[in-house]
Image 1 (tube, rainbow, N blue to C red):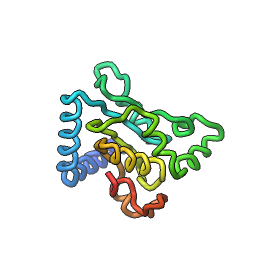
Image 2 (tube, rainbow, N blue to C red; image 1 turned 120 degrees about the vertical axis):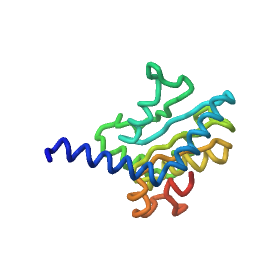
Image 3 (spheres, one colour; image 1 turned 90 degrees about the horizontal axis):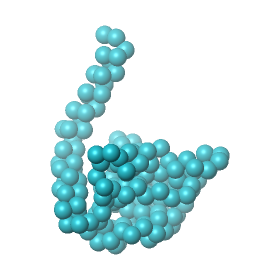
Length: 163
């Protein structure tokens, strides 16, 4: 088997695992999004650093959903030098709360949060503040990684545990 075939087989294995373990959560997320959109609400997408690239993919795309708003904030989009500073910024307690408060999120909206590890303070604080405001949250994470690493948030929970 060639390298390309092995790669594609690995992708199929991953997709099968996602289907077998996450279908229920994905259906729930789809229902959440449909309810919000049909109810005239907004969908926000947020991730820090490279995780923000997924959020950007949902925003302002030809044929995409016009109700998706990318949550872009200074220091979290690889927009500073040195880029390693973004790692310190995404660990800053309270910044996630300030981000949510700076956006027009309201009850009934949905916030999609992407974080591979789900352990840093900014996305966790953002999820917690959004939920306080009545915003529904959807977490996209690597559950195997996130459940194996300790939270860097004072509350001691990772993102998947608060969404």
